[in-house]
Amino acid sequence: MEPKLQTGRRDAGFTLVELVIVLFIVGLLAAIAVPSVSGALTRAQEAALTENLTVMRRAIGDYHADKGAYPETLQALAEARYISFVPVDPIAGEDVSWVVIQDLDLGGVRDVRSAANGTGANGVAYQEW
Image (cartoon, rainbow, N blue to C red):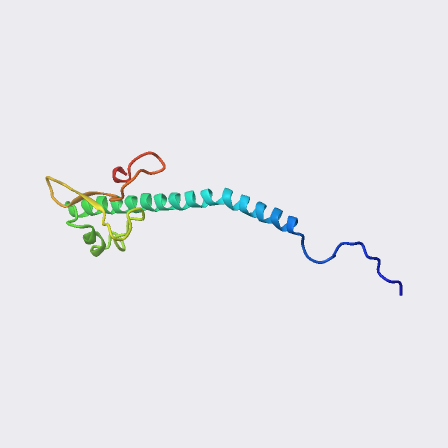
């Protein structure tokens, strides 16, 4: 058997320069990905808000068309089975309820809006959606 020739370099492991380059590349990719992920969360919350408002407004309209009056509360929509439950405002959170617009002539809930402060990605304040 012939002896193995020494090349002066270890065959196993990484050098410090290789590890630094890999860490730099991983850090660079993370810095690029973080803003994209945080923007996706905001877009998802805004999509949920839009869907919740659409469902509740449709239920208010259906309730009014069926009964000839607006519901007294949003909970009345759930009790009458027009919606399964009153959803949580995804932007404002669980501690804040919806802003209810009352009908001045007939009484009851005519419209619903978000109670969240701030402006959406479309440039419109959440309370105006």
